[in-house]
Image 1 (cartoon, helix red, strand yellow):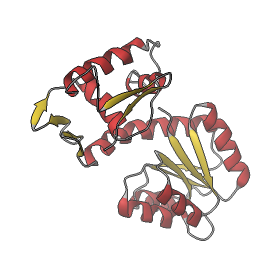
Image 2: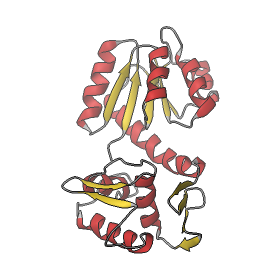
Image 3: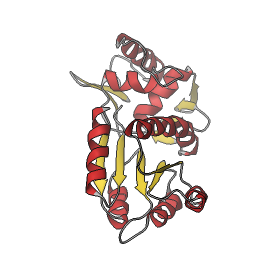
Image 4: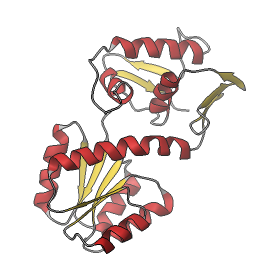
Length: 232
């Protein structure tokens, strides 16, 4: 699954370097040069994580973070050219998920991003509201699924697969996306690819979830591309 990251810094060369390095790892990267632009982009685009400089024109990074935390648990890593403890305290008090001091090593940035995304994945699931679609109710906090009021028993992997797609209605996930999202070992490293594993789990999930697995209404196939969860 391709994560989308917003990088916010008033130094174009830093943004250029971050974008180049992160896109090499398969991330989708947007840029903002000031705090106001960052908030506008967050209002109009879904992001999985924000890299946020503390010292920004128009609206400071800490003020941007406060605005984000008023409505969202969006993961935020703060960046700063200063290393004083007070900056760190302020950042974490406002709800930063991590903190890095410039100049930073891009390999460390990548490692921190992976760590924060793994650490916040469960938090995002448990704070999300139940999703209701045509008789189907998916509750990420309880990790439960009902169809027409009847409980459907899913394995942990089946539920994770379902919620990955259902929380992004209409988004097409390739088999590689789903494999990367759900079949990593505990250290976050990729296991040996066997994309048939994805197909097998999709088939089993349809058998449990769909009224007619031969004619699915929830989990659909985009031929030649992948799978997606159908909207209302």
